[in-house]
Image (cartoon, rainbow, N blue to C red):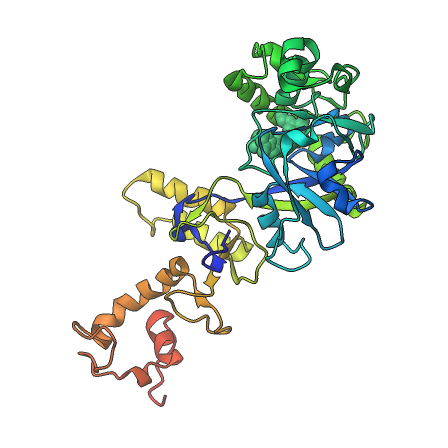
Length: 411
Ligand code: ZZB
């Protein structure tokens, strides 16, 4: 998690919003634009892709159309390999910090395009049985999530199913949103995943179960979506592509294959909004960072055994449970940053130790600071009550105090 304004990683306690928010990994599906747009004429002959962020790469076999926000502001951005991507400026910024653009951290917008300009145009939908699909409007798209472009899989996504069904059946809505019947009529949901108890069109099944009437039934759609996500992941079995494979495994395989074939890219962003204390909307950036490997088995087990032992007491048993739960998921923890107050990382002094990690060190120092410094001597310029000068505090001295190392009077 990174603040471009601060020019450094934005750790939990550097945030005014979004404590505990992690990174969401998406697959950016490259939908190649097949039709021409007057405003894109200067780039004729180049490949232009609408990029849709998805959590379900294994469902790409069932794409029937692409959705865009008519009032949404999109931009055209060049990528490292010469591809031109259509996406929100926010997504382009994340890409620029993930080594996708020609110049790191730069994402000049080549052209601004309103979502409505794309409606009715065609894109190639990779892996789908329809091959070419239409771009349709969807008013519930959030510009603050993914790329602002969604690829539609009405067999497995209740939102997509409800919208497509309304566009197919409601002439008034089509007129209102300026959608031609021909763009939706022949695009039926394609059965691609079998789920025990839900059949092979789970979105339709869930929309019936939760009585979703229209694409505007926000609450019911959320329930239907949760059910499809959950059962799709745990019980789904592929009917196309890697037939018989569990969704859980197919997700990883299809993603890798699509990226290797140049049909998709990895795309990351904060899973919810993260704002730094300096007021910057944070992004996800690839950057050098020292990590504490708290997930390392022997470390983890030693700490866990201690937390569970009688030597470790908490006032409230809930706290103890939380410690154990966190030890279970905690893996790498970023422990360095480039600016701000802190102790220099001993082996790499371009970084300081991130303040939360640093605070585990200075807490230890506090146990002896009273002797080495004493009151009214914060900068340690004077020798404290123990009479020990700073120069005498060698590594051996610290090891003697904190690690029970032998006392060596000769040092
Ligand atoms: C294809 C797909 C197939 C999706 C499926 C879901 C499902 P979330 O956060 O839980 O909603 N999406 C992506 N960007 C946006 C946006 N800007 N506004 C609205 N919706 C967006 O999950 C992210 C999913 O929401 C993405 O994955 C995308 O739709 C959509 F079979 O891509 B998905 C049960 C869901 N099934």
